[in-house]
Image 1: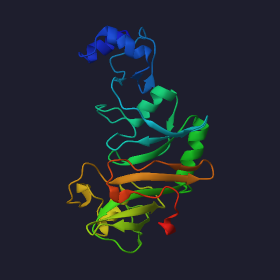
Image 2: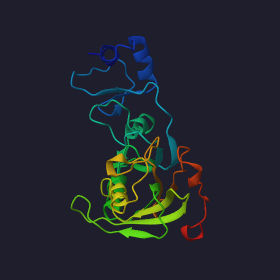
Image 3: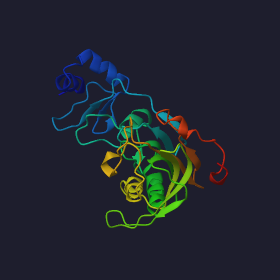
Image 4: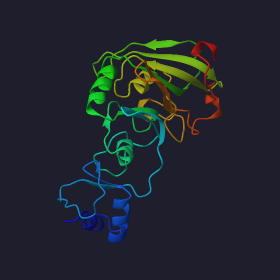
Length: 253
């Protein structure tokens, strides 16, 4: 079946004419690859995704080798199994055609994500992440008042994990913290924050009882001599408590 016919059949709300327009605008992915030919033949088991009304993704910086983007909270980093929501990877592939994911953020977490634009760069960057050579700095709002730096060095899912929480300011109820992770285990910050009775605000899975529109966790910076400092500005969904001087080092804030 032709791609435009397949889109009209799978998505009844999209006419065949509209399908051709979306294909021409490179807003259609087949098996996670952008396609621009309406007459392309597709099989029943081919995965088709249509990005008709998707948000613009803020690109922090790009080179011929890699691209760093600011992932919105609530958007998956990579395609979900049910394909119900477009992922950051899919949306960037519409723009850059060939990209490789080298690390991930949890869906409810916002912030900087780095993608490679060649297989060679993907292997290089993946190795740097695996070796913990890239400095990863997050910002979070946690429950309670934290006054001193705390280092949590307990295993996550049976693997070594180390997280440093540095309090920046508080309002007597919640505390804004800078978070440095030396490892990158799944849900590491959230698990460690909950383990010291300072769960991330909005994180019901790991003990937060606070009402929040989102998980108050943001991947702020990635740093390495390979690419310098990649910084994702704090989103407006964070409260005024999170207003940080853009250039001040941690010990001067």
